[in-house]
Image (cartoon, rainbow, N blue to C red; front, side, top):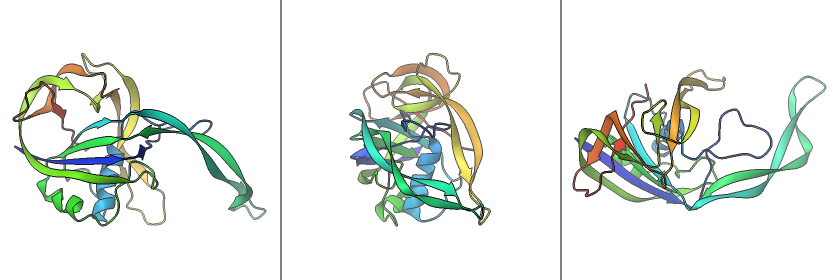
Length: 222
């Protein structure tokens, strides 16, 4: 099979952890699949459906740090509507430093979205700007075991250790005037780049012409 490989790099990355909305804003160790799907959609200037491509990735960074950020809070008006408070707040926000994302897609038609992006890619928030440094098509073959790093694996998964996260696969945003809803969520194990695991599982692919045992987990989002 052929895979589309895109490398994106940036200065910072922030991936919000679900259910954590107060106190220090922590970043997830790896990007959720919904974030990657949203990034592709942002570059394509259209909503990408979860059945249009399978996604594999490896993510790494130089570490994390904390930043102070101004926050704008809301309050209820006398009429019962929300409005902005005049006073601002200060929060601590965690972010990744020097992120590198290697993205693998089995839909080769997506190449045009990265070669002629309609919008700038972002690693999470709009200020976490990223840019493409490599676009290529690679030959790969299915396999059932190998080393994985810097990616999300379904939980439970034998031989894998890492932070367990409940994350969305994709969001549904079809009802005009309403907030988006989670289309599907799953439990994952975040396998950090510097702490690889050797696994035997389905949906693994190995890039040809590589001398190591590393493989890519290629996930269907539906």
